[in-house]
Length: 168
Image 1 (cartoon, rainbow, N blue to C red):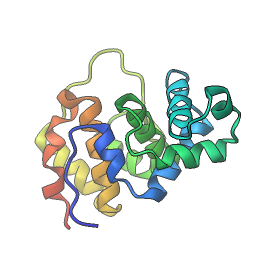
Image 2: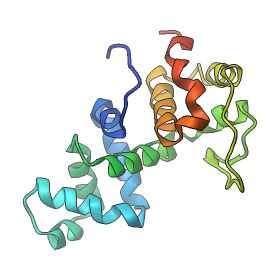
Image 3: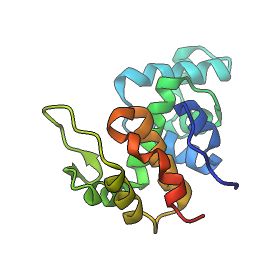
Image 4: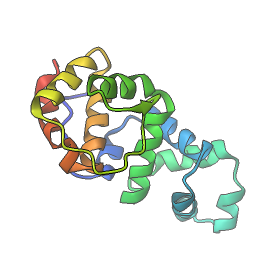
Protein backbone atom coordinates (compact mmCIF):
# COMPACT_ATOMS: atom_id res chain seq x y z
CA UNK A 1 0.00 0.00 0.00
CA UNK A 2 1.35 3.41 -0.94
CA UNK A 3 1.69 6.47 1.24
CA UNK A 4 -1.56 7.41 2.87
CA UNK A 5 -2.80 10.95 2.60
CA UNK A 6 -5.29 12.56 4.90
CA UNK A 7 -8.77 12.36 3.43
CA UNK A 8 -11.46 15.09 3.43
CA UNK A 9 -14.35 12.80 4.44
CA UNK A 10 -15.00 9.72 6.57
CA UNK A 11 -16.30 7.95 3.46
CA UNK A 12 -12.96 8.46 1.73
CA UNK A 13 -11.13 7.05 4.77
CA UNK A 14 -13.52 4.06 4.77
CA UNK A 15 -12.84 3.39 1.07
CA UNK A 16 -9.09 3.31 1.75
CA UNK A 17 -9.27 0.81 4.61
CA UNK A 18 -8.34 -2.76 3.85
CA UNK A 19 -11.19 -5.28 3.54
CA UNK A 20 -10.06 -6.81 6.86
CA UNK A 21 -10.18 -3.41 8.59
CA UNK A 22 -13.66 -2.76 7.21
CA UNK A 23 -14.82 -6.18 8.49
CA UNK A 24 -13.35 -5.57 11.96
CA UNK A 25 -15.08 -2.20 11.99
CA UNK A 26 -18.46 -3.57 10.87
CA UNK A 27 -18.31 -6.40 13.43
CA UNK A 28 -17.53 -3.91 16.21
CA UNK A 29 -20.30 -1.64 14.97
CA UNK A 30 -22.91 -4.41 15.09
CA UNK A 31 -21.64 -5.62 18.47
CA UNK A 32 -22.85 -2.34 20.01
CA UNK A 33 -24.63 -0.38 17.28
CA UNK A 34 -25.24 3.28 17.91
CA UNK A 35 -29.05 3.53 17.90
CA UNK A 36 -29.05 6.55 15.60
CA UNK A 37 -26.92 4.69 13.03
CA UNK A 38 -28.30 1.15 13.30
CA UNK A 39 -31.28 1.89 11.06
CA UNK A 40 -29.02 3.53 8.49
CA UNK A 41 -26.75 0.47 8.47
CA UNK A 42 -29.70 -1.88 7.98
CA UNK A 43 -30.98 0.40 5.22
CA UNK A 44 -27.64 0.19 3.42
CA UNK A 45 -27.63 -3.60 3.75
CA UNK A 46 -31.19 -3.85 2.44
CA UNK A 47 -30.35 -1.60 -0.51
CA UNK A 48 -27.18 -3.40 -1.61
CA UNK A 49 -28.75 -6.86 -1.21
CA UNK A 50 -32.08 -5.79 -2.72
CA UNK A 51 -34.04 -7.02 0.28
CA UNK A 52 -36.66 -5.64 2.58
CA UNK A 53 -35.45 -3.87 5.72
CA UNK A 54 -37.10 -6.58 7.86
CA UNK A 55 -35.04 -9.23 6.07
CA UNK A 56 -31.84 -7.23 6.63
CA UNK A 57 -32.72 -6.89 10.31
CA UNK A 58 -33.23 -10.64 10.65
CA UNK A 59 -29.77 -11.52 9.30
CA UNK A 60 -27.20 -12.78 11.78
CA UNK A 61 -24.79 -10.06 12.96
CA UNK A 62 -21.93 -11.86 11.16
CA UNK A 63 -23.81 -11.66 7.85
CA UNK A 64 -24.75 -8.03 8.47
CA UNK A 65 -21.10 -7.26 9.18
CA UNK A 66 -19.82 -8.96 6.01
CA UNK A 67 -22.34 -7.14 3.85
CA UNK A 68 -21.73 -3.74 5.42
CA UNK A 69 -17.95 -4.20 5.16
CA UNK A 70 -18.34 -4.71 1.41
CA UNK A 71 -20.10 -1.36 0.92
CA UNK A 72 -17.63 1.35 -0.11
CA UNK A 73 -20.04 4.28 0.23
CA UNK A 74 -22.15 3.68 3.34
CA UNK A 75 -23.01 7.43 3.81
CA UNK A 76 -20.92 9.99 5.63
CA UNK A 77 -22.57 9.65 9.08
CA UNK A 78 -22.42 5.85 8.93
CA UNK A 79 -18.79 5.94 7.77
CA UNK A 80 -17.99 8.15 10.78
CA UNK A 81 -19.68 5.65 13.10
CA UNK A 82 -17.83 2.76 11.50
CA UNK A 83 -14.48 4.53 11.94
CA UNK A 84 -15.21 5.09 15.62
CA UNK A 85 -16.14 1.41 15.96
CA UNK A 86 -12.87 0.40 14.25
CA UNK A 87 -10.80 2.38 16.72
CA UNK A 88 -12.71 1.16 19.74
CA UNK A 89 -12.56 -2.46 18.54
CA UNK A 90 -8.87 -3.26 18.65
CA UNK A 91 -6.96 0.01 18.55
CA UNK A 92 -7.47 1.17 22.10
CA UNK A 93 -3.76 0.88 22.98
CA UNK A 94 -3.03 3.36 20.16
CA UNK A 95 -5.76 5.70 21.37
CA UNK A 96 -4.60 5.47 24.98
CA UNK A 97 -0.94 6.13 24.11
CA UNK A 98 -1.93 9.12 22.00
CA UNK A 99 -4.19 10.65 24.65
CA UNK A 100 -1.68 9.91 27.44
CA UNK A 101 0.98 11.82 25.49
CA UNK A 102 -1.37 14.80 25.44
CA UNK A 103 -2.35 14.35 29.12
CA UNK A 104 -5.99 14.17 28.05
CA UNK A 105 -8.23 12.22 30.47
CA UNK A 106 -9.68 9.04 28.98
CA UNK A 107 -11.02 5.62 29.86
CA UNK A 108 -9.07 3.03 27.86
CA UNK A 109 -8.89 5.35 24.86
CA UNK A 110 -12.37 6.84 25.16
CA UNK A 111 -12.28 10.57 25.84
CA UNK A 112 -13.70 11.60 29.18
CA UNK A 113 -16.74 13.85 29.06
CA UNK A 114 -15.60 17.44 29.09
CA UNK A 115 -17.67 20.21 30.63
CA UNK A 116 -16.40 22.95 28.32
CA UNK A 117 -14.89 22.96 24.87
CA UNK A 118 -11.36 21.61 24.93
CA UNK A 119 -8.64 23.96 23.75
CA UNK A 120 -6.87 23.19 20.48
CA UNK A 121 -3.65 21.24 20.78
CA UNK A 122 -0.47 23.05 19.81
CA UNK A 123 1.89 21.93 17.04
CA UNK A 124 4.40 20.90 19.72
CA UNK A 125 1.77 18.79 21.50
CA UNK A 126 0.74 17.26 18.19
CA UNK A 127 4.32 16.32 17.33
CA UNK A 128 4.82 14.85 20.83
CA UNK A 129 1.64 12.76 20.53
CA UNK A 130 2.63 11.46 17.10
CA UNK A 131 6.07 10.54 18.45
CA UNK A 132 4.37 8.62 21.28
CA UNK A 133 2.48 6.41 18.80
CA UNK A 134 5.20 6.06 16.18
CA UNK A 135 5.68 2.38 17.09
CA UNK A 136 2.13 1.58 15.94
CA UNK A 137 1.48 0.83 12.26
CA UNK A 138 1.71 4.05 10.26
CA UNK A 139 -1.62 3.53 8.49
CA UNK A 140 -3.41 2.98 11.80
CA UNK A 141 -1.95 6.17 13.26
CA UNK A 142 -2.88 8.19 10.19
CA UNK A 143 -6.40 6.74 10.09
CA UNK A 144 -6.86 7.72 13.74
CA UNK A 145 -5.43 11.21 13.21
CA UNK A 146 -7.59 11.70 10.12
CA UNK A 147 -10.68 10.59 12.05
CA UNK A 148 -9.91 13.07 14.85
CA UNK A 149 -9.40 15.88 12.35
CA UNK A 150 -12.78 15.21 10.75
CA UNK A 151 -14.55 15.03 14.12
CA UNK A 152 -13.16 18.30 15.49
CA UNK A 153 -10.87 20.24 13.13
CA UNK A 154 -10.54 23.16 15.54
CA UNK A 155 -9.24 21.03 18.40
CA UNK A 156 -7.05 18.67 16.36
CA UNK A 157 -5.97 20.98 13.51
CA UNK A 158 -2.30 20.85 14.52
CA UNK A 159 -2.31 17.16 13.52
CA UNK A 160 -2.57 18.03 9.81
CA UNK A 161 1.21 17.59 9.53
CA UNK A 162 1.20 14.15 11.23
CA UNK A 163 2.03 12.34 8.02
CA UNK A 164 5.34 14.16 7.62
CA UNK A 165 6.27 13.52 11.27
CA UNK A 166 5.91 9.74 10.89
CA UNK A 167 8.73 7.83 9.28
CA UNK A 168 7.55 6.05 6.10
